[in-house]
Amino acid sequence: MLLGFLAGCTDRHTPTSPNQPTLAFDASASLTSGVTDPAGDAAWNRNTGPGAEAKVPDYLDIVTAAVSKKGGTFAFTMSLADVLPASPQPASGGLGTYDWFFELDTDPATFPSGKDGVFPQNQALPIEFFVAVEWDGSQFTGVLFDLRPLLTGSPMILTPVAFSIGGTQIQLSVDASALGDPSNFGWAAATCARHAHYPSDGVQCLDRAPDGGFAAWPQ
Image 1 (cartoon, rainbow, N blue to C red):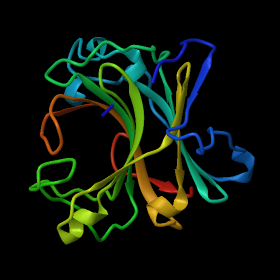
Image 2 (image 1 turned 90 degrees about the vertical axis):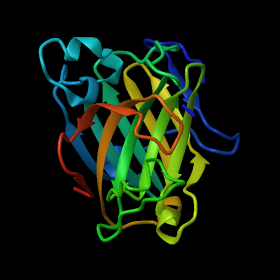
Image 3 (image 1 turned 135 degrees about the horizontal axis):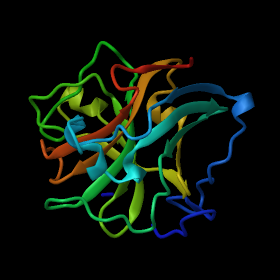
């Protein structure tokens, strides 16, 4: 599941419906949480052995990530070590899909899992939502993964969300109500390559910020 744009100095804004706003917000008037991450640390399966980093394109290497809320909208922003091209080289494997995403822990007491989730049902993680830009080999899309229904045996819910890509920056916009309007949560940003359909173990982690645990929103 992972639209075209001009790389470099040109911004591309891609709302998923005509009625969705483009991503513009005033960080000074918002609740914000941000992290930094060293450039050059992205590696296949987080393997930091000799030469591992050289195999991962810099547009999959996170250098900063932030979550902001203004009014009733959350903005998720990720900056990369290089310009994200209009047509990235496909990932190896069957699907050739790349993901730039945020994982959200809005309820530390729950660990959604199930056969209709992101991961195999024996993998329970403290993540209620993923907010992602995905590249499927032909186009980019913005998606919100709501994993909370897995707690009651129902499939996860996928909803299109507005996003933009400009140079080295990715932004996504999500209504707070779609996340249960949380007053606080843990979050992390990550990139990965996906080689199989959901649910699957066929995911290779490339970079994460912070490297371990979650950052807190608001900070």
